Length: 260
Image (cartoon, rainbow, N blue to C red; front, side):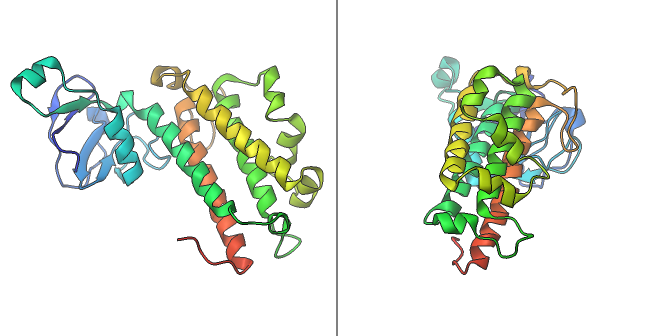
């Protein structure tokens, strides 16, 4: 439990007491955090997609333990006035945390994908249960391509130096609609993994430059799932987990045991 937590409504400093009821969609009231269930947070969203599944006005969604730890780390220290009163209370608003949460989710999705790749041989990366089905090499290449698009192109556009970690040929080889056999004929598993790692590292580095306000901007070309830069970041981790699931299925089809 996050002991002594005080939440505020709409960032205006008015305390909102945690309850143990499931949060209902109340974005019109400006609630950023609605309740606490043990270590799990239930949230609603205002003008942003939390976890890419909780749209404005929708019911809240469960939070995981790792996200709870991020919230702990982001809470400000007690003020001198609070300390003088002997009050063990921490105050924060969701608007100061959304980018940190998006960055954390991208990191978590990447580490989960990495766990699925451990111990696989180059032959495993290229194995296809059927010529019409994808392979792990293509899945990883596609994840890297999409992460670059969602966390960089949609946030700040293309830059000349991007070619060093995301070659144009790689982007084209693994974009939506590409043919796995053609993609992996051009890029080896080791080359694909190197790009995957480079894009991930660059993503976490670049996100440190922004604030929530920088990312609460409507995109000129909205995606079917999101229409702001912040929404693009939330969707990035959801997209990777979708493809991590396909990697997990390919592992099982190879006869490997599930990891968890």
